[in-house]
Length: 324
Length: 253
Image (tube, rainbow over all chains, first blue to last red; front, side, top):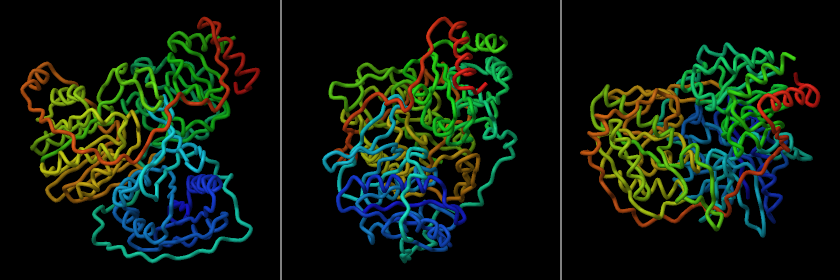
């Protein structure tokens, strides 16, 4: 049995959960006699379970416990290790979110089972499934086969499977509560309420055009080079994480998994290599153009137009060309 | 406070990937290596904590003889001593194997706090730190952007997605995985480089390797998801052509 662990906040499922369901269904389709169940855990998970029951699945299993709200790594590991012992899945699929990253290695370690993270595709041949994932900052791709006893744990990269591709059932899947024992006193992390820093002054998600800079800009004094191009295009200026880490542009202009997710008509990437954490934030853009000195930069895998060259020569030339 | 920092030596950022003959791993003999960047931020954070609270910073790494180079670099930046789990069998090793080797070498030291980067720039599985915490039996938190330590424990700022954060309190001993950009990195001074030569790197024999939990069946250049039109030519001509295509084909400007 394949078990998909859905993620929600205040009863509202995230899109990554439906992507994980789609991945689970794709895996089940490649295996004989394989069924799929979906698990959702937390406090007051009724609404999330009802939404999930529209999926084509054998069952939606709920773990409803006050000790699971708010999320903690200790609480989730305790609950899910019991659920896995009870349900005996062969594969457990989770969305590769920050929350999953926080507890999944602990869960796999406690059960002494394999975990393959950041999976973007499946390759099943002769009954053996290899899980495809990026390595070396996206410069290479690996087919990884988990080893040892099942269940194997798999996390799927956000945006790799289509949420709207998840099959819906003819009738709602039955919802079954599962009771687990969680000792609230044994949870060592004490979380406070999530907050946003007062820095969301820039809403890049509404921008029609974005010029984004990466490490290739080399120094803070060169940022105006990119700004001139942004001005000429009527575009917002954005950046990959290292540029914001260095303080060259404010964090509010960061695109990627830890920043904003954007889908402009035009995304022009200057000196951005294209690590997966950046790509997940911008690959939904309508048209992507990339300038990079490295012909093997992963950004070219998602670009519609590419130029290999020196951005300090090409950007002024673009500004000139736009004036014509 | 007795702090351990786990660092990994990974191929340098400008390294051009080349595969071994079986296509299951890289040709390591061709690669230049450097300190995994997220781990450098973990090291910096440990040095700042030591400056504030006193104690000791011990850097730990797993790998062949070449790993001593990043340990020496960490000592030059200010770490007090190093532990090197020395073995040739860690090429392409998964997070369970690395965490198991680290745990065996670190257990007796009884560290108050263990820091590491949130993931490595090579395999990037983002698992080693969390597995190590579970193996050592200490609580953990991941993707940390601020660390406040006191005698009663830790108050840490965890990064969530999309610009959200959360404070968490936790007892010590504990393990944290550190997000890049948490601080500004320092570089080694000449004095630090000289001092590092006298600092101790304790070499630990690699333990009998745990059974691997992953097999890399194939490693290859990524397949393109889009048919990219590469525009050739001198900068002025290429720029002109890109503008033309964005106007006439894509119609986005």
